Image (cartoon, rainbow, N blue to C red; front, side, top):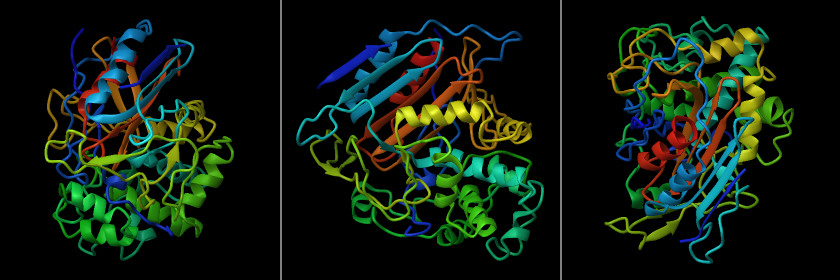
Length: 416
């Protein structure tokens, strides 16, 4: 099998804002390209090194579900994470697995139905709401966002369309490691800090734009979704969390998913998140950072709920056909800093939220990854929903920083 890199003990496995608050990594945690996360600066998006295959002319068959590879991937997470859970669903095979401990003090087992923080997976919910507003004729995707949100972006900026916010072609600059604490002790000390979207955007736009002409390139980042969330709030007069709750969580009966505005805790069963303050990151200096400021990346969910969300989204329950096509459309532009080794082979590989990844065996999946301090997660599915994957693990050196775990679990699910 061709290897590939994705753009973040007790083991069991069974076959079968306050308004506008933001935890420091939040939506800014980097893309796992199909899935790569960097630890140096959670606010910076890094090009991924990943699948190098061309989509087959005819739809390829899914490989047989490889329970051994999935179990090995889950068990292998114990080196750099305290816990992991994974769930594969769909008519092409079902499987669940956990590893590690939910609490290093008590040794409690990881609950397979445990809740976890979503980080940048929240972008999929924000993007869905914006596209719903477009379907309701409350916003025009080709209209400059400056017309809806005057004064949010510098006056000298060129027009940036709403669509360009969603598909990562805006060229908006990103927060850097110098804007917010990203070292382990800084993460511990500042995990309850409160930053409004306006403050985060204001910090980001002090840096040079990523490229001159909006729409000419793609580069994964968070600033565009800060602005998109502000847009939701301007158009509806309510917090983006409230809109997500009323438009998505309640209609789909996602009872274990929340979009908290002020609550710093994780309700219900969950694995704790930790960060290791020891220089060697050998788990000798673990500090519990489960509780942290919610906000842009502060949604909380479970594997079952994310699977339900993906299924409803792909089947068109949340978006009419034109808007669903919009979400899945990948712009035909270069990827900034891209190469033949990334999912787009140097070209864009994100739509209006989800990424598109094709494995060497020809199987193509779409989905999203996310990370916030102490939690890294992702959800992927084939377009026909025959196989779906949701996973979450708890890295000890920050959010979204162990590509090995991500590589193994996604490849085991789809690429074996």
